[in-house]
Length: 250
Image (cartoon, rainbow, N blue to C red; front, side, top):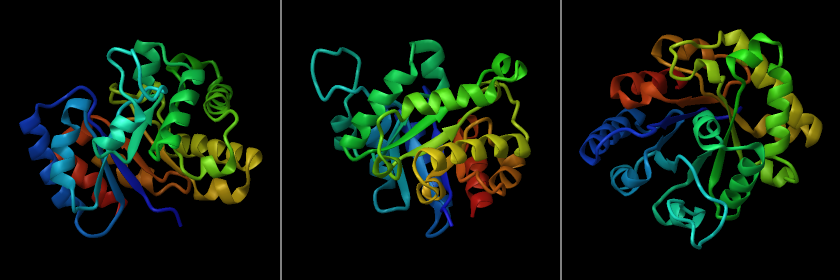
């Protein structure tokens, strides 16, 4: 049975003091058992949050990574720098990166490769827009994204990766895919991995739901066969709400 992972994507929010207080509350909520818990603050907050969670069950991840190990790339951050900052995970290909910063399946592939080579666990995001869903292209879009993201990756590589399905139309809108709808896409992703690699790899990989998970829908979403946790946005910024989602996963 795959252990649940509840990851909080704090995006571009919080001061250092706010981050420290929130991290302390989440460490307390995580307790000594239950799902794996991950916090992904902005780069400037990584060291503060890492200091708070050290010795607890809570891990720290970043929200992006560049594929080159070093060089004249102003504004970017390398995988080795994230490791040095105490990260164990990194989010790659989030829909906001695709929408606002020109992220492509090819660049997702390169970032994921760099993360793996540095020993980081990539959380690779895929998802369709509302227009693509309404036109019946969900399956086509998802398969294109995962095919591009994981091109030339081995089964051994895949065993070190987490996938997050985030329907773009459900991010920051308050809309949420129904549990059945989310389960269908998660099952599609797992089926693709089975076909390209093996059933063993597909059954081991964790696939998170990333479209407005909150306390009111967490139990039902997390009860689905192929939903192995959540990549939580807005609700991860509120200690009480994120704690309820952790409890739901438990």
